[in-house]
Length: 440
Image 1: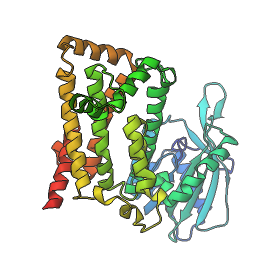
Image 2: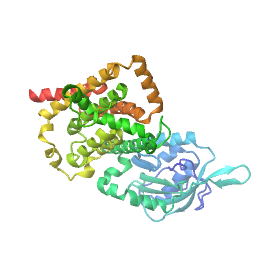
Image 3: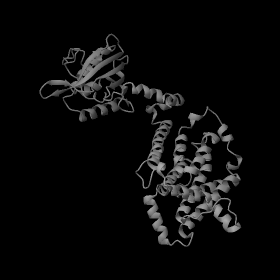
Image 4: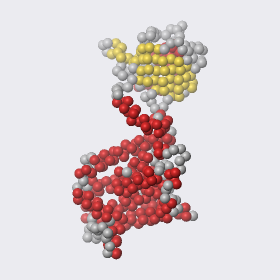
């Protein structure tokens, strides 16, 4: 029965529910073709008197009982008995249901309006706030309850705003159909939708906290120090150390080659090497395969290369609900992936080798690059930047989150456990491993 409903009903109901006598219809023996009203009258009276065994006799063995404050229905008399007993343990003993109105004349169906009362110290039985409810029951041909649904009054009164909420979610429901129903959350589609909702909340929270709030170290994005922007620009000029090596080896610099702290340069390029490998990973991702490559996956990857986790979590949302973007049996998205990036092609090998090389160089660069910096200088820079610089702090957070996304997607790809749990290099091993398998 509803949240308050498992509570119990007043024996002096407004339709005259008195104490049962043996000759009355409220006895629990249900004659064939009993009028539904009589059965429900007996039900409420027995429930108020805590005669749960008598209450259960009124239900069919295959009953389905829907109490809409619970996600799932109670199916079968065994589940229903456990439900009633749990309610009896949780609610006060002086709770009673009062039937305000009940439908008449139908042998198999009955609707009931009710509210809940509790005994006060000075005024006797008084109505419990937010306790009004309505129930519908269906009986089988043997006069036993085969279906029940309880709806109890909500303490929240959103008024017209609830209508606006319906308007807001209507497009999503049109796309998802039955899968949008939270009651399907235990199904694979339902679990995906729940994960997508949580992931969307995380992605929004990431932007709100990391970019816009004062919670992490340093200044929010809209107050970034111009010196930090200049530093990021210099490191972008030296993306994957190309500009530096071109100048050192060939004396050629297309853009200015400005040295920054090696710890900062190494972290910047390490994260970008990791970002690069997400492109082939997303191509093989079984939950992302059906997303348009040029329309969804590639733009998300480009955004990730520039702004890391500002974009990547939104891909994690999209991969969980790909049917939003597809017609059934649409194979166009696989066909539009460039040949060079297909399984077994040279583009994947190049990405795997390049990313691994840059990551290894970056780790060495952090440790020994620009020898004018001592080990103490490097450690001090790391600690100071992590505690005071928002951009540096965000890159460190990116490494943690990338490890989570790597584990999640590689798990869906059924990759070996060492590839899932080894940050960056596990992804590189997966990428080079799939290349070798394809070559064989």
